[in-house]
Every structure is written in C-alpha cells, then in structure tokens.
Amino acid sequence: MNLFLALLPLLLVIGVLLARQSTLRSALLGLGSAVLIGVLWFGLGWRESLSATGQWWPLVLEVMLIVGGGIAFAEAGRRTGDQAELSGWLRARLGTGVTPALAVVHGVTPLAESLTGFGVGVAIAVPLLLGLGYSGRQAAPLGLLGLCAIPWGAMGPGTLIAAQMAEVGFDDFGVMCAVLSLPVFIGAGIAAVFLIAEPGQRARGMGLAIASGLLLWVGVLGANLLFGTATAGALGAAFTLAVHLLLHRFRGMSMQAPARVWQALAPYGVLLGGVLLLKVLLRLSSLEDTPWKYLGSPAFWLAVAVLFTLRTTRNELRPTLRHATRTWSHVGPATGLFIVLGVVMSVSGMSGQIANGLAELGGLYLFLVPVIGGAGGFLTGSNSGANAMFAGPQAQAANVLGVSALPVVAAQNVSASLLTLASPSRIELAVRLCPDQPERQPVFRLALQVCVALIVILSLLTVLLAT
Image (tube, rainbow, N blue to C red):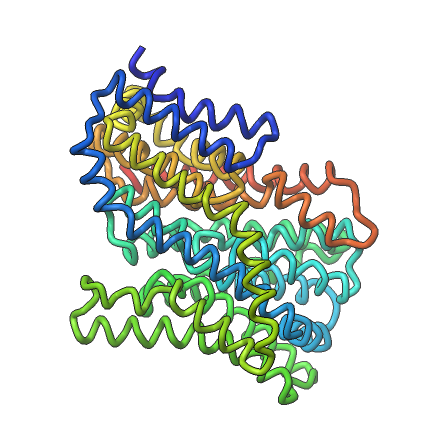
C-alpha cells in the first residue's frame, strides 16, 4: 500500500500528460498530491519542510533563471538577425551530401541547444537543413537527431538537478554522462546517414557518421574534464563544427567570414568566455563553494549575453523580455515545480519507498534504469522534469542494491535527455518548421525507433558500469 501511495504522484503526472494536458497542470497536480500524501501517510512535518526549503531554493531559482535566460538569448539573436546571419554563412560553406547533415547533427544543433536549450537547436537546424537542399521529411528528423547532447542543453540545468538529487559532484557526474553518451552520438549520426544517403553510399556514410560522433564525444568529454559540465556541450559541439568546416576548407571551400558574421558570433563568445573565465577564477581563488559562485553561473552570463546582443538595438530589449517572459511562463514554473515535487518525495520518504520497491527487482532493475529515465523524458519533454521526478529514487535504489549511484543516475539523465527528441512537443516543433509540413507519424516513428535501439544499448552499459 505504501509503495502505491508513494508512486501515486508520479502516476498522476504521467496520466495528466498522457491526457495531453499542460506540463504546468501535471506538475501542480503531482506536487499537490505529494504534499497531501506526504503529510497524511508519510509523516512529513514542517521542520523537514523548512530545512529542505533552505537547502533547495537556490537551485530552483538558478534553474528557472537559466531557463528564462536561454529563451531571452535565443529571442535576442532572432530579433537582431544574428541567428539568420550565422545560418546563412554556414549554409554557404557546408556543401552537399552526407557531411553537411552530420555537421548539423553533431555541430550546429548541439551548439545551439547547449547555449539556449528547450528546442531552440531544432528551430535553428531545420531551416538550415532545408536551405542545404533536404526535403521536409528529411530536415525534420535530422533536426531532432541533433538533440543528442541534451544533458548539456541550456548549459546543463537538468544535469545539475540530477547531480543534486543524487548528491554527486556536478562535474564528475557530467564526465559519466559524457562516457555514456558515446553510443547516442554515434547512433544519431548513423540514423542520419540511413535517412539521407542512397543505399550504395551508406557504407561510406556510416564511417563518416562514426567519425563525426567520435569527434563530438571527444570534444564533450575533454571539455567536461578541462572546463566543467556547464560549458562542455557547447565547447564539444563547437570543436566538432570547427573540424567539419576545416575539412571543407581543405576541399576548397572558402572559410572567410565577413565582419557581420563575427559580430553575430560575439554574444556567444561573451556567454562561453564569461562562464569559463569565472569558473577558472573561482577555482583558483577557492571561492567555488561561496556565494561568489553565482557570478560563474550560466544564469548570470545569459543575462549579460542578452544585453550584449542588444547593445546596438536597445529598443528591442523590452519586446525581447516580453517574449521571454511569456514563453518562460509555460516552461519555467513547471520546471521549478517538478524540482519541488522531487524534493517533497525525497524528504517525506516517498522516494525511499519507491527505491526499495525498485531494488526488489534485483539485477533486472539496473537494466530498466534507462527505460524509466526515457519514459520521464518522453512524457515531460524535458530532462529537467524527468530528473526532478526520477533521479532521487534511482539513486536511492542504487544505494539499496549496493551499487554505484553515479552511473545509474547518469544513465537516467542520458536516457531522459535522449527521449525528449521523440516527445510530442519536439515532433510538433520540427514538423511546423518545414513549409511542406511532412506527416508527423513517420517523423515520430523514426525518432522513436532510434531512441528504443539506443535505450537497449544504454541498459547494457548501465549493468556493466554499475556492477
């Protein structure tokens, strides 16, 4: 009975989402039911609640600010024409064939998504792919496959949530997520090749896909080790894109960039450079665990980057903030409420009850970890929401079984991130970006088939790494 009551808030969330209600409504219902059940059946008291509030409110605020900052940064780039300028320059230099698609899947989309998040990478990639000559039925799924680096999307708030829930170091956790992402990066590239290459060209295309996926993996893993998790996705994707462009340069394509392109790149440099510089300075001055650490937060530098982007068009600041606030109201509060839901379930002991139930599955549970994470990502369309719901119980179940929680929760994060690319909201976004609007079902079916195959591989890796 206690196990059913502990699961009930999550079941309500899943039911509301399956009924195609809003994420905010599902989060509110889940949180309300968790508080009620926690108080009436699990002995949740005000002392525990106050203690948890003091511990978690900075994280909730930071994540919500990162969400809002990413939305505002993307809108500022759209209003100033920076996004269009960069897309046009890339389109003129990537040529034709399989390699441009891989440059977008492993470079452009992960870079855009890592800096802004919440599907913006798809919004940038699909028009670029259409400009490269791909049809809508190719461009839509290709844009979705580029969401292979979602653990670092919007500079990693979802990954930060999972690390906090599992009580593991953020950067160590990011390294483990990078290790597990190798099959995801390569799998996304191979799927892209099978989507666009002629049968006779697929063998060569698969070799290119594996090489391109390895490039992204080396870049993300190396950046995670050298600079930390927050910027690893952006730096790894930038490295991959640079190598693709360099190879095109060797084939005779001009890489010359006019002044307007450099101007469009400048805000991205401010964002990445600011986060990296402050992180190094804080580490050298031993201030990483003090309030000064927030000066190195992506939330702060996203705000700086927005102001820098609009430095010559200040009249666009107010409309940008209006758009960001309106969009944020649909995703920000729900994200925060999912985190609070996870905290309530953890503090009340409901997560522990679920963990004990999962642990009773024994070795089979480890195989199912990515399945659970993937279901959360598919239903919420967000690794932040999925991790807020499931990262805590997954970590506790690992502890009960006596296995390492680090690879278990990393598998939760990577699988949740992966399934967001097949979520209904992402499919709808990708299809609507195509003028010919291809049928949704084939796009969904392809995305889901890729995800299911990769989830099986992640399940095997989870068993191997955790035991």
